[in-house]
Amino acid sequence: MPSLLRTLAAAALTVSSVVICVTTLDQVCTPGYAHAALPAPGFYPGITIDTTSISTSIVTNRTVKSDWFPASTISYCNVTFAYSHNGIPNDRVHVTYWVPSPDTFQNRYVSTGGGGLAINSASSSIPTGVIAGAVSGLTDGGFGSFTTQWDAVFLLADGTINWQSVHMFGYQAHRELAVLGKEFTRKLFRLTSTQKLYSYYQGCSEGGREGWSQLQRFADQFDGAAIGAPAFRYGQQQVNHLTSNVVEQTLGYFPPPCELEKIVNLTVAACDGLDGRLDGIIARSDLWGVGPPPGGPLLRQRQFSGGGPTPAQNGTVTAKAIAVAQTILNGLHDSQGRLVYLSYALGASFADGKTSYNATSKTWGLSISGLGGEWVRRFLQLHPENTLPTLQNVTYDTLKEWMILGQNRYTDTLQTTYPDLSPLKAAGAKVIHVHGEADDSIPVGSSVHYYNSVRSAMYPQLSYNASVVALDEFYRLYLVPGGAHCGPGRSAPGGGPWPQTTLQTVMEWVEKGVAPARLSATGGGIDELCKWPLRPLWLAGKMECVYDQASIDTWKHDFDAYNTPLY
Ligand SMILES: *[C@@H]1O[C@H](CO)[C@@H](O)[C@H](O)[C@H]1NC(C)=O
Ligand SMILES: *[C@@H]1O[C@H](CO)[C@@H](O)[C@H](O)[C@H]1NC(C)=O
Ligand SMILES: *[C@@H]1O[C@H](CO)[C@@H](O)[C@H](O)[C@H]1NC(C)=O
Ligand SMILES: *[C@@H]1O[C@H](CO)[C@@H](O)[C@H](O)[C@H]1NC(C)=O
Ligand SMILES: *[C@@H]1O[C@H](CO)[C@@H](O)[C@H](O)[C@H]1NC(C)=O
Ligand SMILES: *[C@@H]1O[C@H](CO)[C@@H](O)[C@H](O)[C@H]1NC(C)=O
Ligand SMILES: *[C@@H]1O[C@H](CO)[C@@H](O)[C@H](O)[C@H]1NC(C)=O
Image (cartoon, rainbow, N blue to C red):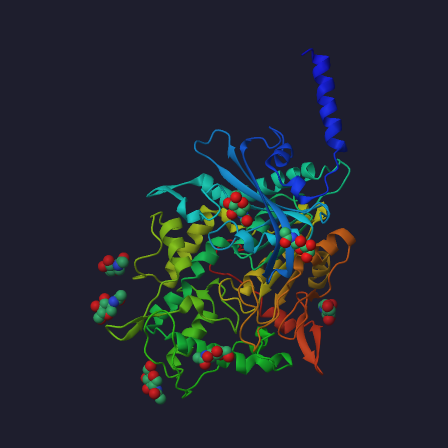
């Protein structure tokens, strides 16, 4: 064909594709339609999309619910395709985008993150975008399949790190998911170059870390982000799961699970009213001060079950158990008494300190934390095993050395605490960061410490109050009274509050300029959360958000065990 004719034919194709008016999900949900919307070759340098890999499937009237989005009935098209990185043998990354019906599409894109060692949370997280009229994405990180976790591919051999997998898990897979997803969305819904596509992120725990990995690096990638309990400061965070075990070993006492649970219950009972309301929720873990958690002999017979046959436990709380609990809550200190890392807040369960029962010796003993044990064995010592065989000879100083090793080895990939968010602020992005105050997996103090790191890195010249006002323009932190890890707490009868519509609040802030003073929540009779550093206090039955300097001061940590700042 002469070239002029070819040009005309191509132009005709383009024109005809513009005038076709797509209105239904069925019309969008075909491999052919999705194929035409794939980012063009070369759009993302270094990546080649396998155009034959596209699959589409339509799902209608599916009911979804979660702590992270309102219960909804949604219809969507699941579009999945694969790509590879040029030059890397046997490389294949799968991404899934849930596409909403064209009549509900609101010019939005949302990336969703994972948890633990998973880079996605499958169908428990991805609906959040569709509910908000967005194309919503997740990635498999190139680990083999959507259900393959990172640890399965982390070692190429005993002692040899698969660095590509580290970079993908650290931040690169999410970068690619978002850049490809935004372009795919634009083409799928035929947005013109002047039409705005709003882009967002939502994730909690590892998903929260993944979110910060993007916000810290790619300032203009998302317009807004809803971040929960991020697993950042990764080098410290993962080893810290072993702190409770080492405390028990060092003090030579392995409390039966019932005993630790009793201590938590007594703590909740003792601290509940400090916030001005008796509701089974410690809304002010900071008001207890530095005294020991309450204890004492309580003679209540009860059967504790869970994790194999265990004997009846009588509910007695021993002085030794209180010492274990107190030492855990004090945070990890090295042999010279310097602070290495922080611990959970009062009211959190002692999940890391869970012990196991030996039916032969009829004694309770060490049960090595799964997350902590695998981190050290596989990711620090580089052996393809799921946990450490023993904690023999492991001291507080060993934990500190492991923290520093992980922090240094994975500084650019996993640590994820880079504190200067000036580019993010300049790009106009908005971030809402939430953390359950009784989180038993990632200490709530970890989020407060990062907030403070950002504050002092960006505004060293401003007063405390002025720096908070400056941060308020783009980054707000909300602690959830009694909140557990990425969901409501269980200490209150009927459960505690959780901010279920955080993504919607971020969207209001980004698209309409409505900055939240308090954050909406549901559950536990608490329907609003105070913006840090203000703290909840019930006065005459009404929740106020108060400024309390003594309270703020209890959240300041000087990690003097290190010779460099720990952000
Ligand atoms: C989905 O729900 C709508 C509204 O209730 C209904 O009209 C439609 O028939 C349902 N579609 C399917 C496939 O069940
Ligand atoms: C989407 O479809 C793909 C391919 O059929 C499937 O493997 C995947 O589980 C689906 N993902 C979700 C989150 O529904
Ligand atoms: C602690 O409190 C919870 C919730 O009220 C209760 O289910 C549990 O049995 C209590 N545990 C102990 C050891 O008293
Ligand atoms: C409760 O159990 C502990 C050991 O688990 C025992 O030392 C203590 O005497 C018991 N107390 C009562 C009152 O049975
Ligand atoms: C349980 O106790 C017995 C007797 O002291 C001991 O031989 C065995 O190694 C213990 N088992 C475990 C898993 O520690
Ligand atoms: C602990 O230290 C002792 C004494 O140095 C040594 O014999 C033993 O092998 C060590 N155990 C482990 C697991 O490293
Ligand atoms: C800081 O702001 C709070 C109100 O948010 C106010 O109560 C407090 O007095 C201020 N502190 C200083 C030093 O201005």
